[in-house]
Image (cartoon, rainbow, N blue to C red; front, top):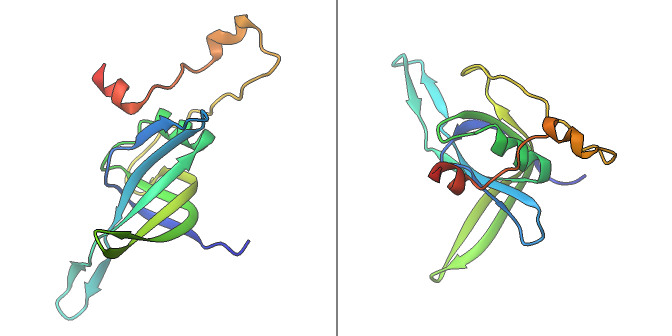
Length: 147
């Protein structure tokens, strides 16, 4: 309840990385870049500020759906989730890692169009004959690109 929630509009800065954890939990991670723009009334021009990069982590069904949606570097996205700021030491220097643990994610439709395909939920009573409607198993992005 007292966690910092954030909604971010930006562009994917890296290709999403998908994998299963040792316990078999789907996880997907990528970076999002945001560059603020300000209008200078005196000059009548727009000026870009410093770009900020954040890591986005998706878990379980969200990770699988983002992976199946073929999100790629350069796509405009909207991300909502919990803000995580971690401090760590590297080479004797203290650094900050800024991450969003995503709860929702989608393409920014002010920048383009998308087609939505609802994902069927697994039916525990399904028979082998129902497998024709099931989605194909997901494979890591590295394997998909190698094919």
